[in-house]
Image 1 (cartoon, protein in one colour):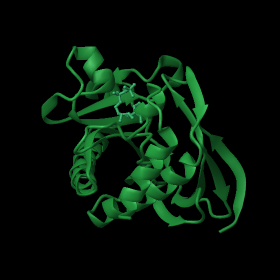
Image 2 (tube, protein in one colour):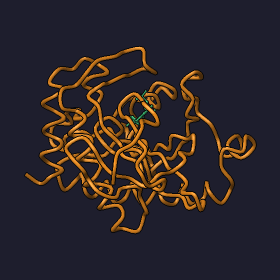
Image 3 (tube, helix red, strand yellow):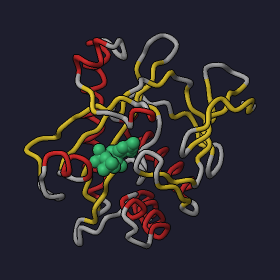
Image 4 (cartoon, protein in one colour):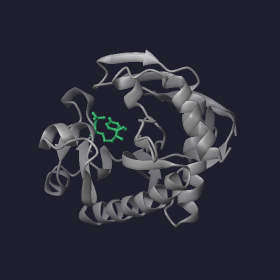
Length: 236
Ligand code: UDP
């Protein structure tokens, strides 16, 4: 497949058209942002970690029955994916309280939640990705009831698959964000990425943060931690 013009540049990835309109090429960058773009930096080789890790996890998720955009890894940073229109929703599952949830509701980080708790944010940088509920989503025509049901059930399945996968690698899945897209025929599939940028992962023995919070909170050993997570994900 031939790479054509750039279609989009986000905070962490570029997306290119190909000679087939049904496929895009995503290219992962080392750029890192936090707090809605207020904090900017780079994490050396992050793009490589996030590309390889996302692909391993997307392949696993697909085996478990949740369709994804992943087609084929082309290089360390580049992957061929199915072209989708991204639903403007960040779908978050929380197993343990952390981050904005802890802040919003005044609960200590690390407090286990009674069940995997799903929330949506409206993907809109200008508005700072505000929390949004099902009625809001349907009232604004961002997704239909059927689409939301599909997204919910896929997301809970992804949580179960990833929780078990990471635990086997000595990592607790605290929370994560995923995004879905629609194929030309309306089918909903998992898209975007799954990486230390988008998941909170704590070492099962030490509770050490093994994710982007090291960058967000200036905890040090950022690059080393991304490499360590990739090593574990690869089973090395
Ligand atoms: N997250 C993300 N992109 C965002 C916001 C959150 O990937 O724009 C991920 C984040 O890494 C964490 C989960 O979603 O794993 C929940 O994040 P939270 O709402 O606690 O926000 P934060 O504390 O990161 O602002």
